[in-house]
Image (tube, rainbow, N blue to C red; front, side):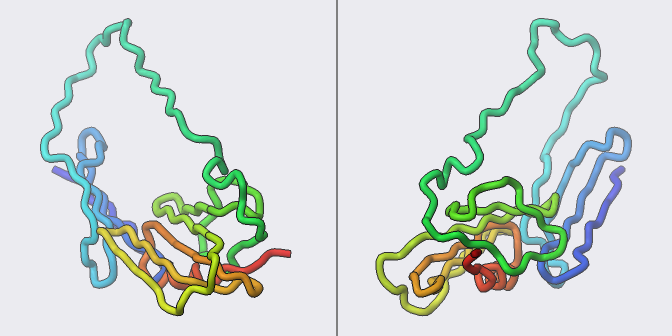
Amino acid sequence: RQVQITVAPRDMYRYGYLLELDRQTALLLKASTVGRGNKVLERFQYADVAYTNGGDSDPAVDIVHRAAHSQPGAFSAAGIGVPWGLRWLPAGFLVTEETGTDSARRTYTDGLAVFSVFLERLAATMPSGEGVVRQGSTTSYTRGIQLEGQPMLVTVIGEVPVNTARMLADSVRRVR
């Protein structure tokens, strides 16, 4: 027997989730990302789960795992030379790390979904247009913009609908 938890979005800027847990252990067995019209965009689930009663563990086994992560901002250490930010964020999203205002990347989360905004200088003006790729619940949205007369390429990648990614790209502005 399972317990189902529905996480419904309160706005159109994010996806919903359907979580299915084992009633006895509360182990997450299945997580589905749900888009408009209750369409399942992505599903993660266990095909087979086996566990024991926990008994005595081997004292020689180290159960602590120390994750090695790159330093915040390492991706954009050189920066892009243009202080920038977003005029608009969907409610509940916060920046995940502090980087300089000229960092080439910013990452945001609402606790479930994550997206990053990348900004790159272009050598020449990019023709108008946009590019969108969706794989499951992940969207990649790219287009050229002018940031105070400088041609830039803005890319939004993450677990947000295409319209949200487009609005985020539209909200890129220079910070003074």
